[in-house]
Amino acid sequence: MSSVYRYDPAEKYDEGFDYNELDTLTEEEVNAELARAWTSRGPLYQVFSNALMLDYGGPSFAKRHSWASGTFGTPRGQEPDRANGILYSTHTLTSYVMLGWETGIRNQFHVLRLRGMSKEQSMEVVFFTMHYAGMRGLGHTYRAVGDFLPQIAPPPRELPLAEGWVADPEAFKCGLDLTTRRMTPADVENLTNWYEETIGYLPESIRFGIKLHPEFVKANRAKWEVAIRTLPKQFAPWIMIRQNMMSGNVDGLREAVLLGKAWGISRHHIANGIANSCCFFTGFEGFHIAQKAMEDIWDAWDE
View 1 (cartoon, rainbow, N blue to C red):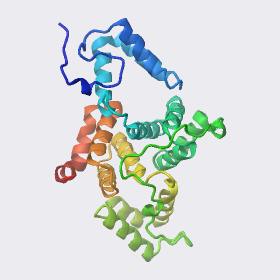
View 2 (spheres, rainbow, N blue to C red; view 1 turned 30 degrees about the vertical axis):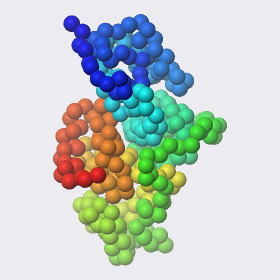
View 3 (cartoon, rainbow, N blue to C red; view 1 turned 90 degrees about the vertical axis):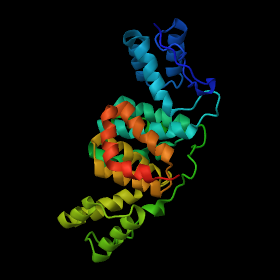
View 4 (tube, one colour; view 1 turned 135 degrees about the vertical axis):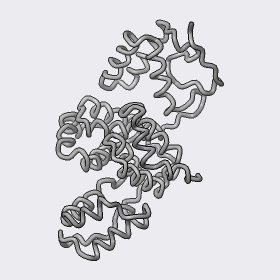
């Protein structure tokens, strides 16, 4: 017997499926879904992957996947939230750089440009991700887009931003003395103050890093401070959420959520960023990480 999902029509997501019949699939629905996947004219992996689900996953699996992933999108009949598309594509780009999936990297450069992000801003995402993916991530990015990066055209529209998201390169800077590589007492004080004033405490990772290898902590922090320049500062904690969800780093995720909260990322976007990571990279087990990292923050968050 076919499952029936009853809802207000305004909740219909902009896909080619009829969600009133989750266990049936018509030829028209299949064609509409494949046509939608081909709309951006990027690499064809989305068409291929969707075709696999449609041909072999059966209507129940294919529709439920679309239904689940659609919870991060814009309900049909409402003005598209183009900022959402930018946010999720940014998460996807950083994930593919970390994983070294070059087809995906190329596709996200294409998708982000269509959605309003310049190639220079996409490279800011890559450089920020380099803190986690290293030279390997840059190598995969070059093989994905490096040969035609100079020819990528400017985006066809302005970059859509979530409310309150603004560029603020000075917000990253803690006041390091860049005339020397040595970690000075003033550097330690300034770095400590930045963390305490921004997220409320000095992470143990930074405290121990200063004890273990202070010159590296200073140099790496100096690089971290200039990776995001023209994008809104909120992209830094937004990317950190995905990176720490993928690596399972509880303390890192807590820092990312607190920095995002301090810099104005909404409770709604934090929830979507974590759930989207579970949808595509960690499964439900990712909520173990999030629960340990931020349940107390979430419960006390009055937005």
